[in-house]
Structure formats: structure tokens, C-alpha cells
Image (cartoon, rainbow over all chains, first blue to last red; front, top):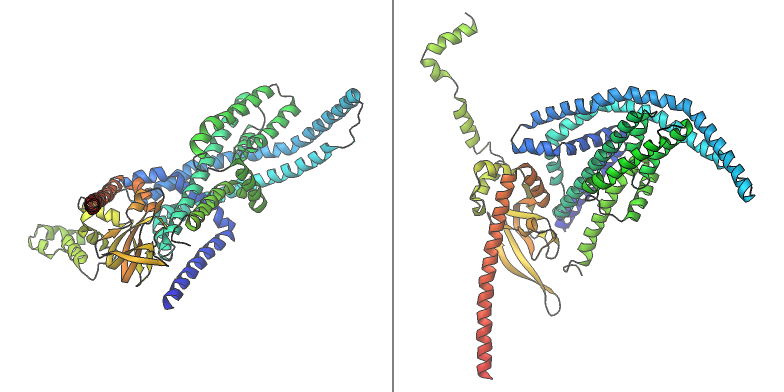
Length: 345
Length: 206
């Protein structure tokens, strides 16, 4: 009886500690987000850290080098990019009425054409709704964007601090956490924890690289074409590219509107640029980086993205896919345990 | 007189060398002290006694010991059950472990004791090699047992960080598997001979 109690107590304590850590992090997004980013950076540095470990180079030196890497590779481009992108975001506010006028005019022309050809009068007016929807979301996006970039600067100081400790003490912390896992759960929990860690980290890292490649190709191309809002459109295309299937179309939509409103002569070239950037992504980046990490049915991917956006907004959309992959793994583990384990009857 | 001058003067004096603290000697006695050694730091010394790690250097054993988890089990506690998925390899640090196989008898499940493992012995090595390992026996603690556990995720990490140590470990695990395979082959051979003998006896009788 005493043993059963002991096992029960250990399990209860483990669940309590795990839930406490999770709820503590979730209740403090200002810590959770930079910590999450620091964790992703630690995963990005993994090939380098392994080389350092293999060469038996001290952890402190490694952590210091990582901080320098972050300072030059992350903070400097953010500081440089913030001003350009904020300037472009402000220009967009003046640009929106032009886009609205253009859409209204085109819709009026369409109505006349339909009346002339089919003798049918279109009574509904979706343009009003579309413009209202567009204005609301674009304003909130461009109000949110400089704020996001501003908090990036704040994170620029916190993230290296977290990264330093993840690299220096992360392994020891993980080993200490493993100590409280009860004996009857240790093998499965540790394995699932490792799988989740690997899948989640690898997926975020792969998507980050994918978004950076697509964003860079589009920004460079738009600058070359002297297309307006090159940085903003590149950044937007990179961010939306994180979303599967609809992401590339969403990223292309604002560029198309800008091109049509301005009657930009480089419109065709711009469209080709988006196609080429997404073709590079689909043909080279996605198969190498992402597809091996998550092996999910397209329907599951779409449902998990919708659910992710419902519960967690943009961050929810990004993390929904690795989370779904982990749920699948967990389900398979439980299924195998219950249905293929001969000792359980 | 300044401190630097004092040191300079003393440096030329031969007796000064005897006054100095001999740091390496102090360090040796500190490390050799049974009071200063924790359980964790004695792990690599324990590993030295395990025959499968004969080809490991002391440095490699220290590296390997950093990946091991000390787990305590009380009397009768199951370490793993037959038929469950396996992700861990265990070394018996102290105490004894019973290896049992479960079989379906006429009315209910019965357990048969296959072996009792003591300190410096090991079990569960196949879980490190197979993609989806299913335990083919139950391991149960007899009295209080302390085990050193090495799990599959640790192996993945070790392959990335210390490939030479990981290669040596996999070589050691392969050696265990090869030994077990040879033992099984000999047993099968003996059983086949017995079967042949029984068949020939039954033919003669008929």
C-alpha cells in the first residue's frame, strides 16, 4: 500500500511540476516569447555547439560566442531594418485610399460590363465590405508591426541572456527535470519529450530558414525592379510563407494590389518573381528542410492551422503543425501500447 | 621591503621550494579522499569494472558517465514489463535485478525467473539498436536497486557531441548482442540434436 502511495505521489508531483512550469510560462508571454526564440536559436546553433563539444571547448566560451553571434546576426539587422520598414509602413497609410478608389472604379466597370453583356444588374456591393475588412486588418497590421519591431529590440537584450543560460546550463536543467519523472514513466516520457523537442525545434528552425530565403529573394527582386514597399512586401511574404498552402497567395495579394493601383510596368515581372521565389521554396527548400520533419496528411495540416489560428493567433498558426505532429506521435505511442502490447489484456 | 622583492629574494633561496604549497599533490589527495567523492563522480570508476567497457579510456568513460541517469527502484518495482516499448539500456550499479518471462499457463499468466543480475551486469541493450523495440522479458528490482540508465535520446545526443565515445558504446552493445546470439545459436544446435535423438528413438520404438 505504501509503495502504491509512493508511486502515486511521485506521479502527482511530476504532473504538478510540469503543469506549473507550463502555466507559468504561458501566463507570462513577455518571457515565453523571448525564451522560445532563445530556444530556437540554441537549436540553430546545435551543429556549431556539437563541433565545440566534440573539440572539448569550454561551455562558457561557447555561450559567449553565441551571444556575439546573436548581437551581430540578430540585433544589428533589426536595428537597421526597423527604420526602413517603419517608414514604409507609414507610407502605406497614405497609399490605402488610392487602392480603395481603384477597387471601386474597377468594380463599377465590371458592373457596367455585366449589364451590357448579360443584361443582369449586380446589386450586391462586396467592395465596401472588402475595403472595410482590408482597412481594418491593414491598419491593425501596420500599427502592430512597428510595435513588434520595437519589442524585437527589447528582446535583443533578453534573448542573448536566455540563450547564454540555455547553452551553458540547459543540459543540467534537463537532467534535473528527468530526476523527478517516476520510474514507470521515465522511458516513454523522456522519449516523447525528446521527440517533441526535436520535431518542434527542427520545424521552427526549418520554417525560419524557409521564410528568410523567400523573404530575401522577394525583397532583393523587388528592389531590383524598383517596386514600391520592397522591404515591407518581402517581410510580409516571408511571414505569410510560414503558413502552408494559403501562405504564398496571402503574401502575393498585397503586391498585386500595389502593382494594379500604380499600373506598375513591372507588374508581370513582379508576378514572375513571386512564382520563382515560391518555386525555389517548393522545389528545393521545402523537400530538404520541412517535409521530413512533419509527415502529416494535408487535411490534418489545414485543420491544425485553422485550430491554431483560432486559439493562438499567428503564433498558434506557426506552432500548430509541429504540435499536430507531436499529437500524432503521442497517439501512435498510446495505440501501440494498448493494442499491440501482448502483456495488456 | 616590498612583497615582490621578498619573493625575488626567496626565489633564489633553495629552502623556499620546500615552503611552497604543492598544488598537484593536494589535488591528488583531495580527489582520492573517500569523503569528497560523490556517487555521481564514482560512476566512471564503476564503469571501469564493467567488462564491456574494456576498450574505453578513462576520459571516454568520464564522458559516457555524463550521459547516465542514476535511478533507484524499491523491492518488487518493475523496471520495465514484457511487451512494452523499450527505450533504455541499464547497468546494475548496486542491488539485484530479476529477469522474468511471462507465459500463458493453463488458466492464468505465470512468470518464470530467467536470471538474476547483480552489480556490473547489464540488460535492455537491444532498445538502443532497434527502431521500435519491444521488451521480451520483465525486469524487476530485488531489494533496493540502483541502476544507471542510458536512454535512446542520450545516444542520439552522444552521437552528435562525442561520436568516438558513441561509436565505442555501439561497438560494446554489438559485442553483447553477438555474445548472446552465439549463446542462442549453441542452444538451438543442442536442442536440434536432442530433437533428432528423440525422433530417432520414437522411430525405433514404432
